[in-house]
Image 1 (cartoon, rainbow, N blue to C red):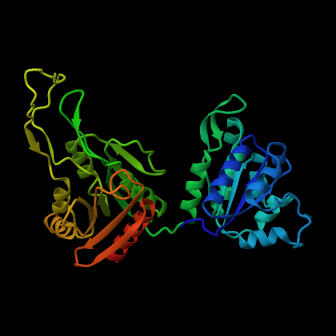
Image 2 (cartoon, rainbow, N blue to C red; image 1 turned 90 degrees about the vertical axis):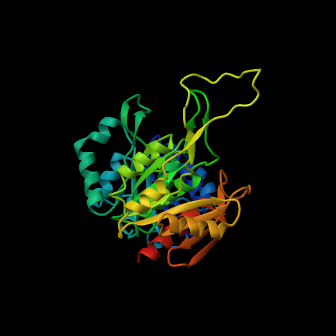
Image 3 (spheres, one colour; image 1 turned 90 degrees about the horizontal axis):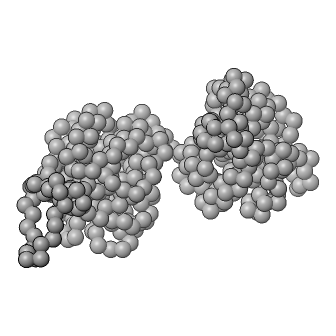
Length: 399
């Protein structure tokens, strides 16, 4: 959905984790959001309001009788807000919000808010697990507010357990998901990503240049749009997208096994992984040693299972299958041939070799070919944006 020109209210309460809210504010501003900050008196004991004012480029609201151009500033902020995030949220503030108490700028403003709200509890483990705090969180959740579970670990009070405010990037991710459209709600999506590796011996293997970035972008976008996503991934150095079930594999045969095992429950299958077409017929159990008297080495290869073709044979009329084609030439001819041979509903194809598209790059340009003969051209852009466009087109074709 993007944060460009979105009006975000950031509520900061009196917890040691208030310093993380500074970085969260930076992320929102970097994404183009207009951010107004509300702070409780206790919050200012941890981080001064000047820090938030400089970064937000707006006055911080700490007092209902703030000297401002509007006598009802808190109502103006509440009415204009597209989202409210309270991070950190203390037990005291949570209790006030759950029971409609309005005795400071933050709690009073929240009574006038009608947009989505994300509450991020942060406190001592025993406090967080206290039945009264949990009851108050349940009240807020039943009222339609979103509650972000705290992380577990060593807390500032030396307690080990739940209560730590999640990292700013994680909160940012969840806000983006909260505000985005949920047109995949109730759908199960199966995505494959990354390369496969085929061992020659215990030390060496055959693989390709796939980074997994495109597949991970699709999984991440689908989860934010409400889908239950299963991601079957070859070896990559990427973090698992939030809320996505990730299954790690290495070889083509392992990937085929996991994909086919999860196929029946999938409504949409998007196979992005760059799978090795061949594997060594006889991988060695010991390292292949270099021989000075033999400068050439021959390795007999055998064909791997064709996962996409197998899915195409098994898929039902209610399942939508998308394949990917990385080509060096004859893009449209090769893509349409692959779509027909493997019974795909859609194929995303691109020319590899450019530094700005294809493997390892953060950007790509893709042509989408459809079973009905139509074509949609996506110009060069970030893979996250391409992921959303691709999903849009899938849903359009599924009706």
